[in-house]
Image (cartoon, rainbow, N blue to C red; front, side, top):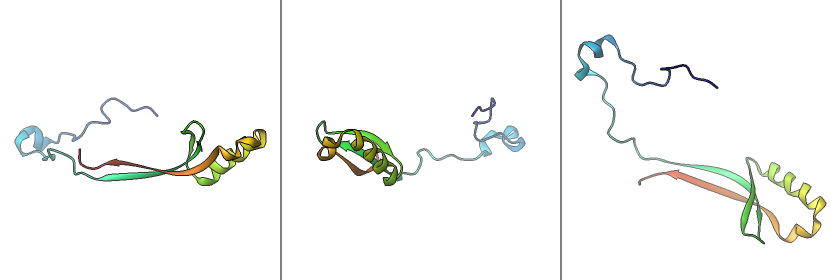
Length: 92
């Protein structure tokens, strides 16, 4: 997606602000603190202790795991699907 020049500027100056800039909108010094969490599902390897690939749903992760296990059935004890929660935000 392409953005035109100037589309991402905020706040857009109004005539009132141009006439008297000190009366313009006040912006907070710091944004309010909040946190957000995102849930992913991952195919994980016990052998290398690492995520192989992330997925948006458990069904997608299970489908990938089954595809791999068709070719490598001896990896059944090494690979598994796990729920991963990433939390962002909060106080610094």
